[in-house]
Length: 614
Image 1 (cartoon, rainbow, N blue to C red):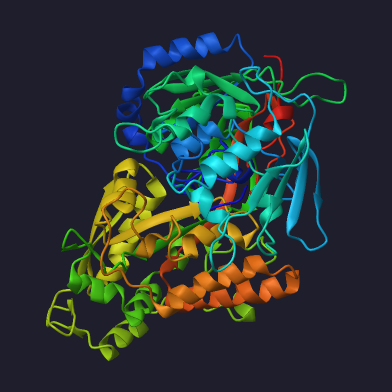
Image 2: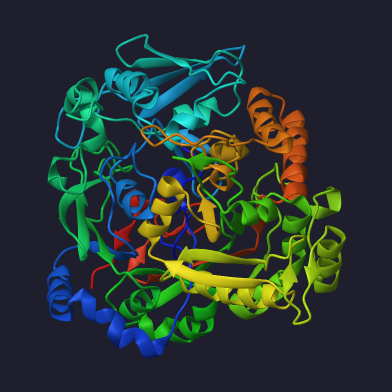
């Protein structure tokens, strides 16, 4: 399933870690400081880790890292990479995505049929499927997941955004039409339905009661089911792996799912690797140190680390794979929400006027030296980014065909601002027309070295045009709480990933009421309402184009629609895109059958990977 989330894209808050499957597979990441390693590794409990490594030598396993603990074991509610990086192994879909070609392939469904009018898709499940607890997996599970969970207004999730079809946002009808057949009927033609409806689903026998019963707060018990306080071994999935154990702040251990459907040509059950271990390492410096010392088997390679690791390939018995530009976006965004909550503006009205000024945003885009970001922060292993649609997508509009771009030009920036009524003090400080010093707080997630380096450069770039930036990195979960909860932030550096080559996967970002419409976020289910929120005409127009793009079945016409959307996004710059680095991962030589790509990462074909005898 393709959709944008905060991180492994859902937000991408760390270096490329090959954790998830499907749309989760293409996650990028970042940086370093050798002097800090000793301090950063201390919280990992070296004795415990060393003992674990010795024990691991007796079990065929792949050890990778995660930058944060999971926030939930409930895949529908997961929007952080700590959760999705784990849950991607526990669930698989009706269809699977080839990590090299991006093409859809049979998954839990052995076949599918699309009606001539393109409104109906009928999937046929494989016979004899089982959940990880051994209970039968049936069409009823698919119908339950969509009708009672994803389409349930009392269970808000980013996933539901993908299935709001047309201008009215209607959901498709999902019905059982045979013992192994399930049919999705769209209210109108919807091009991405095949890909989206082919996603993962949940066990009805384990969760139906939690959906139908409410807790003391009046909300479905499902919302608090399979939280991280639950016994992880009670979490039931249908993917290649299932939970074995979870030690907060240390590691997640997944074991091979004995009921997984895949078998190789000789009839041997897959996957071959018995365990996946995700070490919780809350620093990219420490993660790199663990990989170099042999504690990890796969490590995302940032451009800053490339030269160092390349020299160590032979001695370290690993190979660095490069798959082209990452399937992710990095950007600066301003909080343009003009609303209030409980009578208090979400953003200082003075700053809100700046952020909602088109000239201000365009001027900032011209003030950022992205070429220097590429050369210095990414060691030349990347390129400037100008669109929310990835360059590998057939829907990407290149600059030579009309995509607006913002070249570094501080002199032009100053002139634009002054023409718009801003002015400079004798000290060179930028003031607005009312004499207010232009100053704002810029946040990103701490521990992500490349984002911290980007923040430092942006602070310098904007200081050169008289703007004071207070750069304050925050713990990732604290940052997401600000964005999804209180919404009292001013500017951020973040990223999104997971949309793949299908642009409709980004609709939950560009729809004015989408769950990831972060630059002008509406209140979510259960939150205090926002009053006075305004949606600009151009903002609504972008959302309408994404709806139209999903409705259009002719591919050439879809390209025209998404080209117009890209032009509008770049003209109004609600997100100022920064750099698209190369996708690189270092993988131990003992891991066989690696088929690396930017789309799939190192472990997209986890079921056919093998560990050579040590």
